Length: 260
Image 1: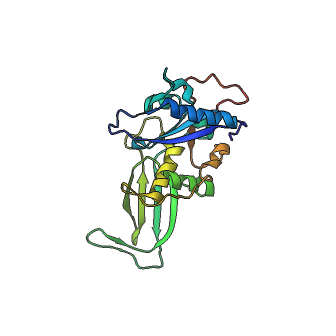
Image 2 (image 1 turned 120 degrees about the horizontal axis):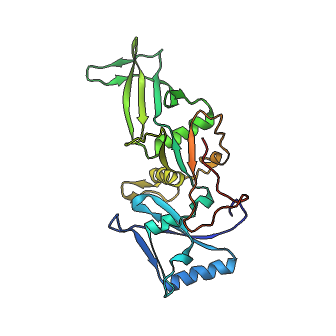
Image 3 (image 1 turned 180 degrees about the vertical axis):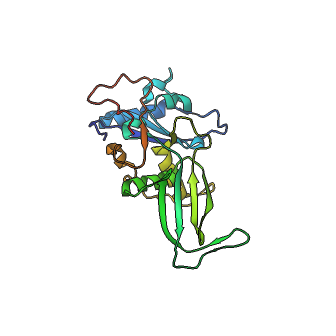
């Protein structure tokens, strides 16, 4: 069930081809016909959710535009990206100002030292999260920043020692894009890719599946639907993708603009 009341019947498929640059999938006419018959029986439009595992990328497409003359289906990853309707389910590309910083402060009432080899020894007294030099104190800002820091696409550097007047004051980890833009904000990932990266840490070890059940976390990105861009200390830009063939949105069901 979508926010506008529409319903879809969604078939989920994993796609993984040997050549990372040539990702495509096909379905036989009989298989597509069976899916369509089921969709017709329940009275819901058919959609295909394709997970391109080599690229950690999700797309949701309407199959009709990729039907072959024989009734089968063939679609490449780039074609699926252009036709992607995942935005109807709430997927957004998340952009923010770099860097994101996680600071672990040393407890001042406990022993702490920095060895000659550069090894810091201390007890963590507190953990703080920063957007640039601004500490995020609002729980929603902080929680989202932690998610982006841990599972977003920016690489993290650290631990980096923080020195005070009386020795080691803590360490920090700094996440920033490998090639920052000159516009002051950068993409840190699509919500679907960020969640998939989290899910993999719970279900996969190397190339081995260790369990099938990972905890869903719908509360992670639900606040983005009503994010308070003006009051938040975490600057955000949310990009909503429309499929390339979509008609311009009307005022009632149109695409939300980018906010900050």
